[in-house]
Each structure stands twice: as structure tokens, then as C-alpha cells.
Amino acid sequence: DKAAQVTFDGVLVRVMTAEHLVAVMLHTGRPQDRVRIIQFLEAKAVNATRLKRILKRHGLSRIWEEFLRLCRLGHPLRRRASRRARRR
Image (tube, rainbow, N blue to C red; front, side, top):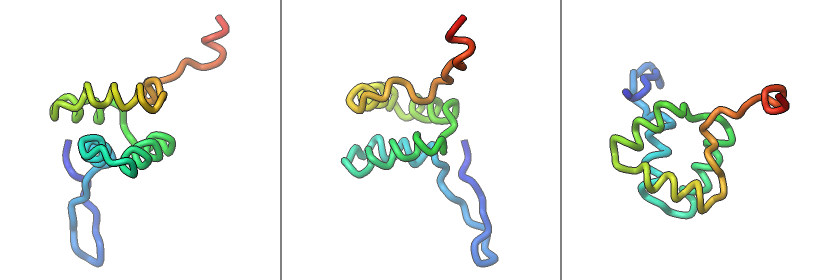
């Protein structure tokens, strides 16, 4: 997982990915960070596969599960079955 590269005022800069930002906010654990994580999830700004890989690499999987439980989010990164599939 690499930082994104963007050009700003003609200068190529590296920018932390949304997944890394979520991991940092989760690790920091401040109330405003928890709110921002939820905003990232609601905006679908996070790639589930990349985030899970980053959380595992940095030993944050347990903290992530606890965060989801405390916020009553279930597993927002799992793909939900379509309504049609659930009816069957």
C-alpha cells in the first residue's frame, strides 16, 4: 500500500491514503477521530481490502472490531447482499 501521488502547485507530493488515515485515527482513538472514521465509512471513501490489510499489519484488527461494536456499526466494509438475493 503506497501513498497516493498528486501534483500541487506544480510539485509532485505524496498523500496518505484514506485507509491509512482511518488506521491512524483508529490508533489515536480521540472522539473526533471516531466521528471522522464514521464519515469516511459513510462516504464509502475506504477500500475494505486495503484497510483490513493495513489494520492487520499494524496490529489494529482487535481495536477495529471493538470500535465497530461500540459504534454499533456491524461490519460496514462487508458487501451487503442485494435485496433480491436476501428474498430468496
